[in-house]
Length: 167
Image (cartoon, rainbow, N blue to C red; front, side, top):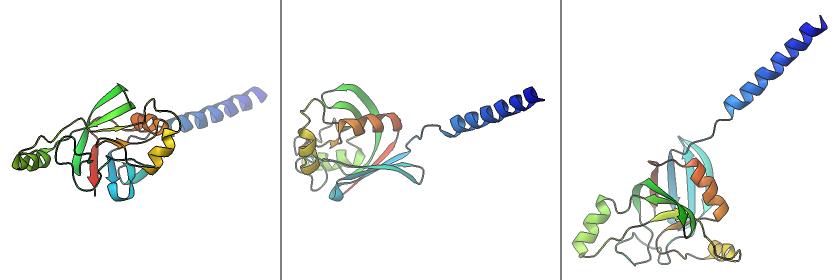
């Protein structure tokens, strides 16, 4: 009888351990919203907010990116279309900039829209750079978070994720 009760208890424990593992599936982000005016990036899984982060933008953040070298962060809709695990800024996720709207605008102005816009960390800058990151826009047009944050984002955001950047 004691053995039977022990087996029941073990089955009961195994069931709850299995349930805990089954429910602890990693969250996959389905969309990212970046609001430039408040320097905040939001990660969503469906309609559920997964996390938010303070971001640093291009050194000239007002308005949409128009041309290469303007220091602006783009505005519009993009996709995560690539990854660089060996970026100078730590891990980085590439945005599908320029989109058609960006290309048409730059074409009308007769300028090169640029490219290579990423969500990335601060890389090998000294630890003191984390404080600068919190207070200033310093990228050439990218969206920067801390190194710890980009590691988390990298693990949650698959290629193909929709990224919306608002003024």
